[in-house]
Amino acid sequence: MKRHLSQLGLALCATMCGLSSGAFAAEITGLPPVPEFLSTRNLAPQTLQVQAVDDDVLGQQTGKYAGGSMISGFVLNLISQWQLPNGATALAQGTLSAVQNAAGQIAATVNTLAQVTNGNGGNNGANPNAITTGGQGIAVNGVSQVTQVAGNNNLGSNAAQIDFSNTPVVLAGGNAPSAAAANSTGSIKAGITFGSNGVTVALQTPAGLATQTITPNNAQIAQLLQITGNSQQVANQLQLHLQTQQMSAAMVRQLGVLQGLQNSASSRR
Image (tube, rainbow, N blue to C red; front, side, top):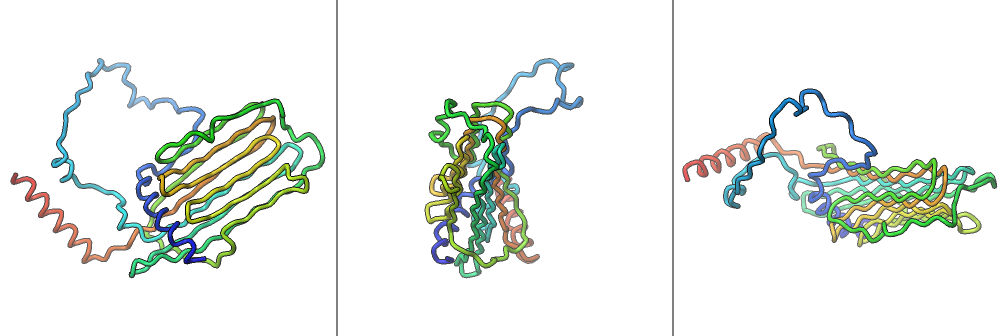
């Protein structure tokens, strides 16, 4: 398991470092009102001014960031769940934990689970005449969240969160890198797979589908909901915790001195 996931762990570390500037992404149906102190109704219109800055100037700028060398491990949690109005449910979830040792080697463990429960035989709310298409063809660099709904009284959400801390990652015992479940008729399916090319989570029901995909090679995280029915409750959730390396006091002082020398040299140019 650890050897199978090493390539994925390395790729995910690189991908998440590139996506770390967007610490939180979630679909929002409405925006809060603008606070009073930010209101511009009493101010005269201002002209936007743009000043070009050379690359050599930008290269000397300093600040807080998460570089690739700072990430020493991560925990990725994914869960997709669907509840139909007749009580039928589909669930797929998984956790991937990876940590890098002092020699640069990555050890990883994975846990997966897929469950499907039958309903009470009542109306499942599906509408076979409703159509939602096109969401699978959307591809962006970074995080994409798409919701397509053809129906009434539905509740659907996509949420992705990325955070940082220096809390050590604990590797728990893992099972198979994939899990799948289905009802007796095959009309409801749930599955999750961790592979060397990325992660895939998929729920399929008579009222639509829910998917989450991570493709590290393309630096993409995609969440998709397609609901073709009424009174469906669906959710995609992704949480990524990045472990940053703990720096000693001596290392912090060395970086401070180095930054000071760089700023001093830059100011004399």
